[in-house]
Image 1 (spheres, rainbow, N blue to C red):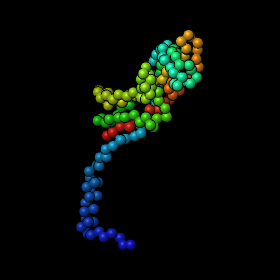
Image 2: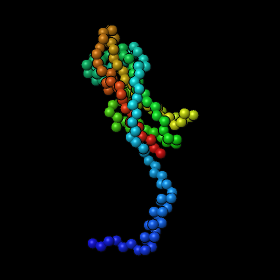
Image 3: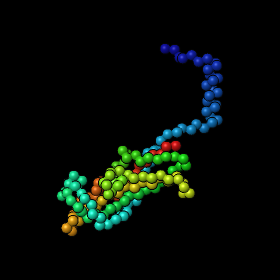
Image 4: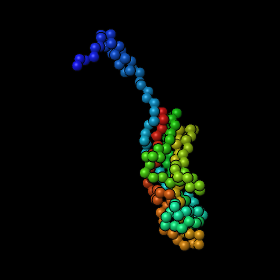
Length: 158
């Protein structure tokens, strides 16, 4: 098999293109990530009445329970002019984006202002403490257990 033929003119064109690429930086646009940030867990509400089904927590009977609500929050500052997303499929676990409606996921918001391009993420868990007649229950937080040390995974487009 012979090598492909490159003429003297083709070689000069290739050298010229290489010089142009070295002089002007090439901007590659696309998704940057995955990026990781550990959220901060905090108790936000106590003694909230929450309806829990046996499907949500197999060791509990379907009914109302008195629960504590926890939030895991993280905030990151992104490069100017970028747009972010949460990479749910790469997260080990997450809670509710809306604990009252029991929608699983991560709530997020991006804003630009004096503090820069900020991306906020939050997910919630509900910890049943007592049944409706005041008897203590010992079950993990819903929907995904303890969220201590939860890492949010996100990417941004530039």
